[in-house]
Amino acid sequence: MLLDIKTFRRRVLLHKYFEGEEADHKELFVNKCDEWTPKKSILDPQLLEAFNECVDVIEHEPPFPVTFNITLQERSAINVLRNNKAIVINVADKGNNVVIQNKCDYISEILNQLNSHNHYERLVEPLYPSTAIKLTKILTKLRALDFITPKQFLYLSPPPNPRPRRLYTLPKIHKPPAQWFVPFKIPPGRPIISDIDSESYHIAEYINHFLQPLAAKQQSFIRDSFHFLDLIKERGPIPSHTVLVSLDVDSMYTNIDNTDGLRCLRRVFDQNPVPSRPDSLLLDLIRVCLLNNDFLFNGSFWLQKSGTAMGKIFAPSYANLFMAVTEQDFLLTSPTLPLFYKRYLDDIFILWDQSESSLTQFITAYNSFHPSIHFKHVIDPLTLDFLDITIFKHTPLSPSTLLHTKVHFKVTNTLQLLHKFSFHPKHTFAGIVRAQLLRYYRLCTSPQDFHLATSTLFTALRKQHYSARFLATVKYKLLSDIAQGVCQSKVPRHTSTDTIIPLIYTYHLGSRQIVSDFTKLLRRTKSPDLENTRIVSACRRNKNLADLVVRNKL
Image (cartoon, rainbow, N blue to C red; front, side, top):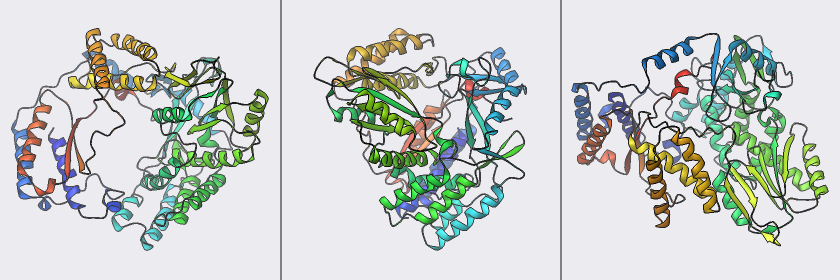
């Protein structure tokens, strides 16, 4: 708790330190070092005294007893698993499952991927030291042209001793076992290249700052499931003969040709000019990050030759823009066009109201339009699963019909939310269940489908020791709030422009009282340093069993 209060004090100091700077430079790309703290003397003396009083109280209070919600034998078993060097423990690619693999099997599957000479190349020595020099030169030009401030330059500059990127994979156990790398024994893995603490980590944040808004502007863009629902509603009735189609790009991230990807970005920049965006230098940064994406695996350095890696912050936006330009070019050349076309990253949803043969021609032409882009497709005249939604026709025999939706539970969805015996505040359990029910309510067109989805969830939660009475109470309260218009999830809870300063603390039996007393003490000071600010307190998520046992570093 003492550390949490000191961390919050640092946030207040940083807020005070950057107060008065321009909005663009106040918060973005300035706070490089987690340890650096402005001098305490810049704070209002009365506010500083309140901090000192709280720290003094916590230091002199007896420590709260440590409690465990797992047995000694269970803790011992966790330690045995963590210390076993012959296995690799990882989370599954989809779902909340934890996968234990033989270390040799894990390595062999990854080496099989790395042996793809079109995508990877073994290096004699790493590239990241020279990459850091190249990036620093570009940052120096950005600073000289006043595109970034001195503080931003310090933030974006590569660290003195950057950490090499590391490769690990997430096992795709949802794939049919007969199609595994070794059938029924070794599942394929989704490659993730961890970029944290590398020479380009902060620069990737900077790049994404410009790419993400451009991705959201694309005509086919889907933000999330709820945005997709809004688009369907706007579409309105469709002809009865319309078929539902989904396309899925195969391994999109690694199959994007770097030259094509940079060309697409240049085109998007030209179509969306922004004077404050350093287009040429930004492309130089992206080029260096793509062409010098080296990483360490099992003691050897490798280079990703094609595409971008999952694990780099700007990768989703980059892939999104590449697909946006590619699909625009294709749709302009296609003799037939879909009635409705929307895309979420590499997942495409289409409504097709023309002949079956024309649809086949459309998909075939799309598959051959770009050498690196290939699709898997699903076609159905009545119902289709897309994202976490099932879309279906309600009245297929009518001249026109509205599309209806309900919750789609993927086979990988274990419905493992928060075990009732977990050490969390009581309101957390109700909040998690309520959030899920609200999502179901918004995704389901009919009340029957909502109640069916709710029943599926409650069956799983009952196995996690949630009482039927508790679940029924949460559901009743949600439906009551919806009926009264209280629960409007699209309306922001707070419309104030005040700066939010989070107070994040570790939960124990006395933490909420300490936080409550502390925030009241701060308000009583009426310090000018807290003007136009709002303190929001929240419990830090405790480690779950997956956090305790997962170990994917070799």
